[in-house]
Length: 206
Length: 206
DNA sequence: ACGTTAGCTATACGGATGTATAGTAAGCGC
DNA sequence: GCGCTTACTATACATCCGTATAGCTAACGT
Image 1 (cartoon, chains in turn cyan, red, orange, purple):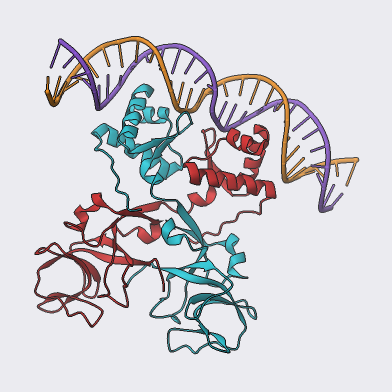
Image 2 (tube, helix red, strand yellow; image 1 turned 180 degrees about the vertical axis):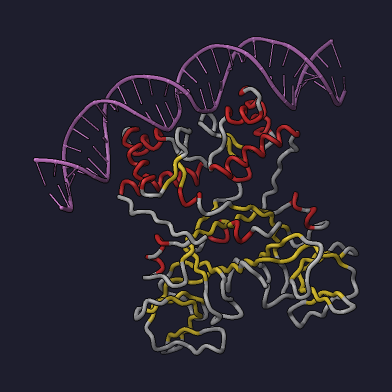
């Protein structure tokens, strides 16, 4: 997993061409064609072939040969698949799992962090302080059940509200508990578990 | 920023084609050509044109017209540029900013979260508990100075060690403070500030 | 009945595109 | 001198590829 990039040093011209390829992918979503590179640097197509071949030999790019726009950044390949998770609002109309189509935004994050998660919730309020703060993003794995002590996303059928709380399972009772002692436990309102919180992102650490 | 995706509902066939496009981009790094889609579903190229036109009309994909492989997932476009930050080990040989070339791994995350950060550190130890826990990833913005109360990455010239602590500026003294009261403040060893911690990621919330 | 949408075929055009052949020129190490 | 690398031109070629023309069937709503 912690594979070192072993890209041999590039010449100035090779670096400029590599940067252009990277920038084009970033900007347009598509790698450039050989001719687009040739046009950009005002050189012949054949010269670009040589440059790209050099970049491939040095391990900076990978080729999808004989395919249009088949120049790929090597670092993009071995860094694992990026996962895009939908960020749901804190007050979805229905059950969050059904509201994914109306996602507010998407979070892109490495697979190893997000692999167990299905969606992301932006948390409002301080009921889980200090573990979870207002504005935090929590990665949620969809689940119908959870163990005692796990932090879960719960859905109240009554009013359609969604909340993040710690699940408590006692001999006879199952209830939700806030970490912040200012909030009382919730035991009366019927709820169902939507998922368990696996990871946390605090965008603004104060 | 929180632009709602207004993607109209897709038919079954359209969804299957959309999924194929997404999967190809994920797997090969390149969007498929019209002919590749046609081959996959054993239909004519013209039929694919109609399907892709429908996907574009419904807002699911964007087109780079008249360009090879010019089918782009709409959600990838408006979600901002993805930023790749180097993850540095917790015990870099020199100053972390100089150790970026030996990055262990890379973290891909949305621009709005990472925009102010230059690199990522994996934190070891519990000196900043409960704000920062063992194994957390902190996003760091390179800086030579910081204000009182900010969480900073400090570098001890003496032994080359790097640590994450809260910066304290008193009338005459500048020192580092752990949040965990079990750790005493550090005031003697000379240090320099490498950067300030802007965001936090807790991969495994227990 | 009529228009609209979904879904499809067969075929064609022209430019885009990767690849290749055959060179030229300059610099470096041995 | 020789081999190697870097960097480049001009030109050619087959096929890839987006686009387009001209149709077709079926389902649904008004």
